[in-house]
Length: 314
Image (cartoon, rainbow, N blue to C red; front, top):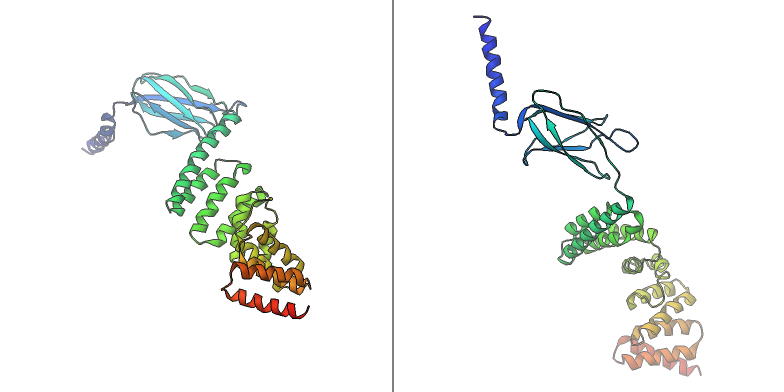
């Protein structure tokens, strides 16, 4: 009896182990094996092997360090074999498994996907992700939009990063995370120094934070005709005026007068600079223009006082 019990136990264990396999039509005693290499004959580790028969089969698995793969437990017959590895053209074929003998080793050489095709596929995918990110941003979902943008970023080379980084910057801006927005915009202008959208948004953010001196660096890089709102130039000019840099302040106020000729404040501040520079005639003309544009404002009253002072000096 001491010899019977272990044998019964082993038989029971085999029955338990075998019972799940019996429910799988693809399961048997056959083995398939193979080797995956690159064109230089080097083994490819981590290639995905997918075995299917009639649409069913075991879970996909990976090649080892030597590029080898093997699977035991397949039913006798023909099996579809698909071998995939990132950056390489997938390999597909059909191989016969033999439950009563040894199946031949499947030797496969994977070919790299041509760079131009990879670039085209990446660009297509990134464009889809970028468009989806833009949609989510417009819907007021900055975190979700950022996830799409960041995925797109991973598919592109550095020179194509700016439009995606701009999207990321806008998600942070929408969340009032100005620190991250600024850092991202600075990355854009490092890659693409003349990116107008980045220069305008970064300049405007810095001016709004009272960092006019830093903003000027980026504002001066804007091409002719590309402008921020008038307040940005006014604030930069005022900062320069308060610092005693009258000539530079005058340049900023000239921009406002030139591009926003109906803005009363532009004439007020330019008049102050001209007054301090001793150009009384030009200052008087600016104060008079301010009074014409906005006669009922406190600045108009100040301008009137300046005019009377200047007339007394004639």
